[in-house]
Image 1 (cartoon, rainbow, N blue to C red):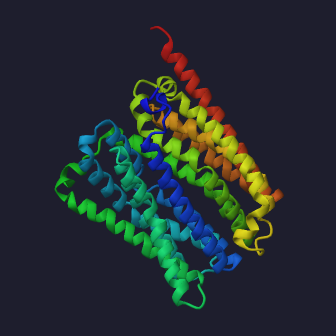
Image 2 (cartoon, rainbow, N blue to C red):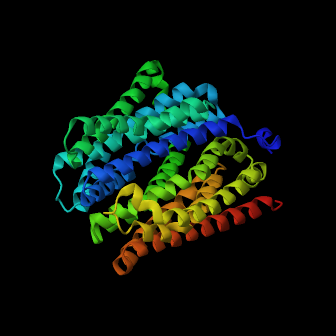
Length: 418
């Protein structure tokens, strides 16, 4: 058991991670409320759909560069400079083709009804900001610099919140193109900060270009897992936008935001444990789970509490977002089991990915992403947003069951005498 848990005191490092995720969530919630109120429901739904598309492609930047950088830092902290330079270069080199793909898919999802400048600003902002912020977060996390990690977590939503507040103060009305500009400028600002750090480490770029074969295969596995995770998070919203309406997609996204906020303690605990899991995971998944078993019990309890809170808060959501989102209460009630299914899968994926089974986790999550898309198309066509929720539940349960089965079989085989 870890010393902090043994002494029954909450470690300061966990509190810093929780504070960072909580402050970020508060700012993101503030942004969600502001943008939902300032834009028309169809415009808000459009922004959600495009953000989902760009978010999916952004996790491919660098092919798992952030996860690899975290692994490098956790196992060999003295090499963090070379690791950062190498993985930052991987991210930058892949941005242009990802931007082209994102724009093409975003245009298809919106049926070509939005101006290209809106698509370009939203897609570019997401692709510039999200990978840069994630790499910086992992850089500090791997070196146990949790205060800096928490600050970087909050950078992107803070800049967006400040820019949006300025627009509200100086413009009579805020339209989708204005919000798209905010997304682009904030993404560019975070990307510039990440680039400045890479330039400061320019002398290490010769070593940065040398990536091992293990880096490449593990990186692809981490990238597949991250991309699949984004599909699970956003595919239902994108399919709803395409098959139903932008308004329904917007309401669904707002209800989902409530779940994200209530899952903060769970995600914080899993996130905080990742570095330790990489360290314990070198001896295998079984040892890692045993070493941190108390944390997984706490994750279970927090997930149950989050589900109960969703049911309690659902009737009051219209106060936050306005009466024009009249369907949000019913959607939130249907989402009450999402903390349980999400936490179960997140925990199993974390255990597998940090104990040398990242390719298995990526394969399961990749197959789960395809399953989720198929289920969304079938069930949304029949049940609208209810079908999207059912598709998510089924996908989480299938992925968790398959991964646990494979991990159990692997542990049994490893334990057999030669």
